[in-house]
Length: 446
Image 1 (spheres, rainbow, N blue to C red):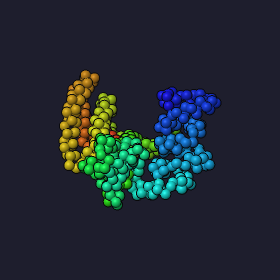
Image 2: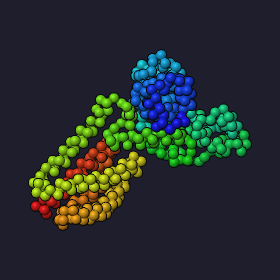
Image 3: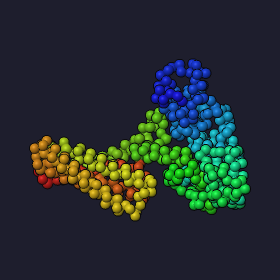
Image 4: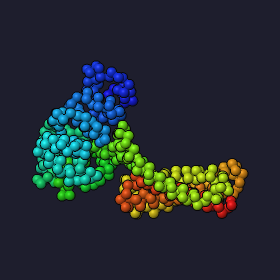
């Protein structure tokens, strides 16, 4: 799509007669790839989205649906006429159906499954033996393979017939289908045709177990230096491969999910999903946040008399809470990333705790002095400056400790720290900050 996405969105929404020239529209849509069309469709209000969907050529529609998130995709699935599906499912394969399965109504799923040939049905069944978070569920079967006794001439004949994307290796298997070797294609053209491929294979070529976690495999593939890595089952039987494009997509989906989860939202949510649906999904976390806010307010209420006598405390309370919250979120983000990449374990969490404590202590001292001095100048009260300085120090240190403990504990109990860690951390830093500040104020200022 030659135009930038914002310009295309504006054109679709603003021009009321966009589709009067259907030939021009068809030309634009025919030139755009499925990723560009998917982004454009997701960016449009539902009515305009459906209008644009109806102008997309049938041969592109299935690929566009696969590239879309599940919520906006569902809108288009329900807007598609029943008789169109037989055409759309003409070239569907197991990987396509795995991507679409959660979005298709049961009747459409059955029609799609029926459209698969016998081999693709087998691939689909095998993939569903693994849950969605394991790489075996997303393995591609588009790769080059030869028997272990094959020769260079066999490989040259094979690569002349087909070359899947990101193919830099031919995989060798034994008679039972077990992975044996990987042969670099780049070496083949300079070798005698009678030479056995096993003689020019790589030693210790990395392989992936189908039960490994998706985003960890994706990272391994991207860092491997190869176009794709083979995937084997528990018996070392070759079942497919993961290439760098699939790995990049898995990583992108994972990090999008982490970002959305940190706000208590689903990465598949439609930009233009119904108001009631969006409000319901977000209300849950607003309610949880309200409960934690009431907890912090309850602790503030314990010092009501102190606040009434020293009004400056009420003025400065947001500063204490804000500094603790920011310090804690920095540590929390670092630890959540480490947990996601399996870099944080019971073996190094103690060292992380010590390091973050020192960082919190250093920042605590620096900002305690700065904020204490500002409070002294503002209210001309040395004791008030001392009180807020100590409270800032204690809250930043507590925030650093909580930033390590909270995600580690949540992860131990199989609770996603990206989803609930920030809510718990905010509660901890608010309570510690308010109790320290108001408690010290009660001791030294009353």
